[in-house]
Length: 352
Image (cartoon, rainbow, N blue to C red; front, side):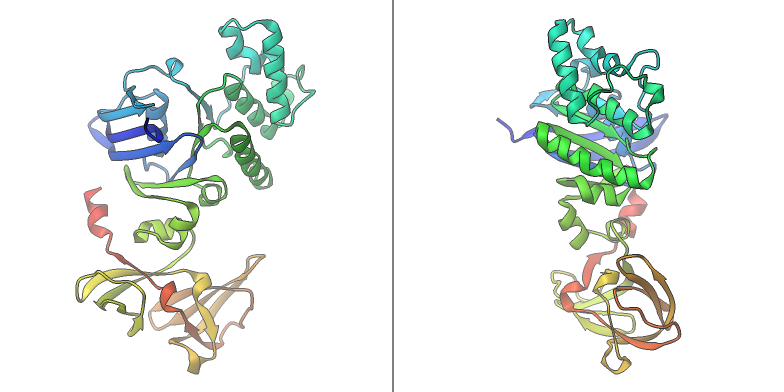
């Protein structure tokens, strides 16, 4: 038996002659929280809709439990979906909204009562049974939509930017609650968002997409610390991205000087992208710096200060808990293992 619950194998999707998904290969394990992350128009929602059966791939195969399901309609898949617009029934109270799918299945009334009560406890809305859904806040409506989707006990829950309509504080609270619900129920969540913080906070696996292709698949920590290309580095967190030349193994030239690094396997004098996270740059006295520059701006971000340092034509982004005064001449240092070297991604972008 395969370790994967869902597999997409070389999936393509065209709309009106325009290719929106290109060679999507993705495997999802049972009970995994997977997030499809990327900018608007990258293909993440189309991928979700293909998994849910709302769209049929132009080419390629979708497997569920190793059975081909390209033409299986949504209601015959062990999948439910929560959309950004919750699509609750305004003429039904909270109880009947959640019970709707169970009544369609003609479940006995006693079991309906037990299951709805269990779902309300799960989403912390016990006692709301007789409330009208129009009287609920956005966060409460979202919880009801999740309860309605989960009461049918799907093996997979698909979530298409379900927190997008909530304010920042409530969105952060719901991120934690969604992960707790997924862990408690032990079912597979596939979540779509363009918000990197949501992806890093909740996911077991993050799938970064751009222009209809998967750029990288990995754990939140792995993708943040070891982005595969400049697009991923820039989309997952903030980065200093510079043009460089890989002189030889462990040696790279950028920003007008040569640095030691920990990367190898590049061609001699290959043009590369160099990525350095702002928190990995250390501000030191000028004489101790690998490069020197002038502090141009400083912004307090709550847990750190965000500063820009101009060195010639390059403006460095630096995060530090210790601020420096604008106009100060400073040095910047970076450890070899914090210099990330990656092959140029322009060719891949043109291909997309």
